[in-house]
Image (cartoon, rainbow, N blue to C red; front, side):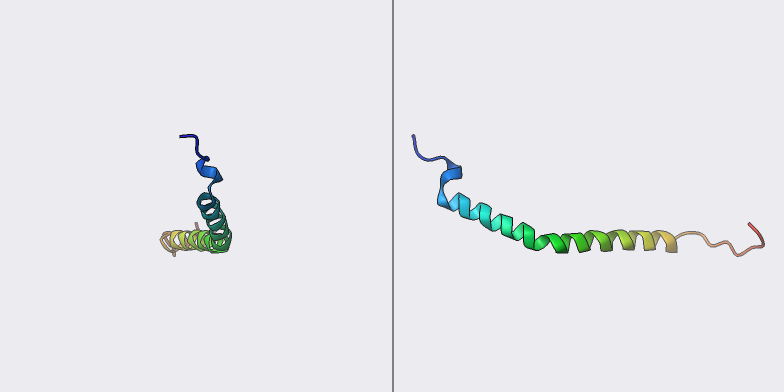
Length: 57
């Protein structure tokens, strides 16, 4: 049972390389998604705020 370690197999190295490329490609999408989510949360917060139309404050 003295075979190569899992991290030394070509399949494992190819999987790691593929996952690394996928994460780099998806990063801009994740950033835009987070920014849009924050913007929409703030917009919902502002639209749900009570409006006071009386004199003075």
